[in-house]
Length: 477
Image 1 (cartoon, rainbow, N blue to C red):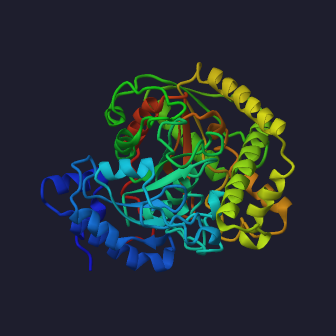
Image 2 (cartoon, rainbow, N blue to C red; image 1 turned 180 degrees about the vertical axis):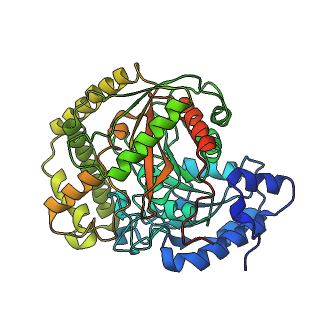
């Protein structure tokens, strides 16, 4: 039975304010979130683990007086560890991978007052742009249950879109915050490389391409959460540039007149759905009407080199993870242990030499400098998040043997996001357009390395001019 029926009238900061004012209790908010999971998850399959008893104990033990005190929160079932619970990465290899400690970011979530009550669906090891793992099954989009929620934070996107929670943990190594944000019609910010910590167990995710943060209903929730979690932990080998002031303050700050580029071109010349082009053009026109200097442009970078570098990093790091698991299990792994495309990465890694990896790092640095030069001329750059509205479920299949079709579909569906994982730039997806068929279409805006501040200012301005919070999917509590 739910505990607070007006739950979805508030974002996470609004719920925390109710707790501070004693208008509602953390127990009531948790009961409401649990009720929403129980009612909608049979259709969505967005939550794969529930930690209800642990969450109730967290409340009973006393919550810190953080900015999100009492707000229920779900972790993505990938990388992050919560003591006493399993993180499976949607792989049967890790079904019994119960943590005996918290990840650094989880410690910071707890310090912010968030109540951690479960984990969300993700593809195996976060390796693709849809959330349909063999272990847990397809995650369904609340806008249309026959369509993908994107990946790899697809469960998180569905949870926020369906108003089960106003904010949920997500991570992005090739687009995995922005893609589900676009597919589910919510806001998603990929922070600058190293803005949030990844320790103590994990080094640089995919050579620094992967970073954790969140998807959310509102811009201010994303900004406030990043304020609560950002900053290097002791022993981290590098840190993101220091912010000038709280990101939350930036959301309501007038950005002034910015020089903004936009493009509907795809990096390798593949097709772009007219709805995605329309989303970019509409956003560019809106920003121009606000007084920004907006022009069509394109950065000079080698999309092929960026793709090769990312694939090299993913294959090497994924395979290293499998080898470490094999050592822990005391046996060799076979293709039966993982999904087809995961094993394909493992086979690919056998052909990658140390020289290949070093060359990929050189490519990463070379292309990053090109993008850096571009952002010395522009404050922000607008592109589609995806090249088409949310794909039908089953269209991208991790267990297909048809590698050519799989690669072609991935590269044409999601050609825009991964460059900014290689370069480390902050990049966000905003829900500013819906297709004629009622599916959300995301607009991606990217900023200079270390400059989330400008993006949060722009996002706050766009959210005010074209609010999306009251645009809800058919499947919603």
